[in-house]
Amino acid sequence: MSFPEYVLRSRIARFQELLRSRNVDLAVIRTLFSFTYFTGVKWLRPSLTVPAESEPIAFVARGEEGFKQRAWIRDVRAFAGELMAKVSSLVRGLGASRAGLDFTLERDAYAVFYEMFKRLNRGVEVVDVNPLIMQLRLLKDEFD
Image 1 (cartoon, helix red, strand yellow):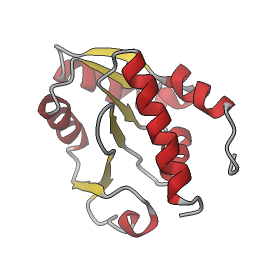
Image 2: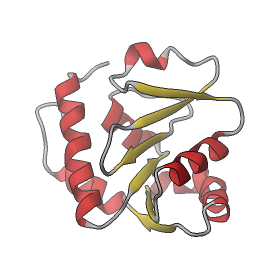
Image 3: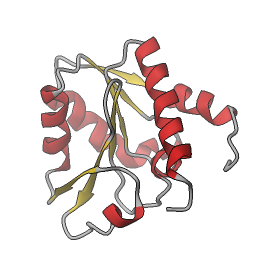
């Protein structure tokens, strides 16, 4: 981890405040840019779910559990090709009715994820949380 844990936890806490202020139950981060900002780790197939009220959950491909040693995230779950099923199960388990996705320049790479998310979570309103992330990034910390 290239950033102290307290810095990354602070970023998550501020993001969660913004999520709550917009009535967003959780955010699913799939872009490398935002994933790295919140975890401090660049990862090949990033997926981070940030509930508005509890600890974040990272999903990594089975066999890539080395992420656990590099990141501060405690809840790391492995997947084997069924990432969308795992994320959707978590969304339902948390009772989310409003979920945020990070739509950035990288979004084209995740267009299929977005469409699958909408199809598997029909009762969940999807909102763009990229403006919230950019708002956080405007407030520089000692590691930006």
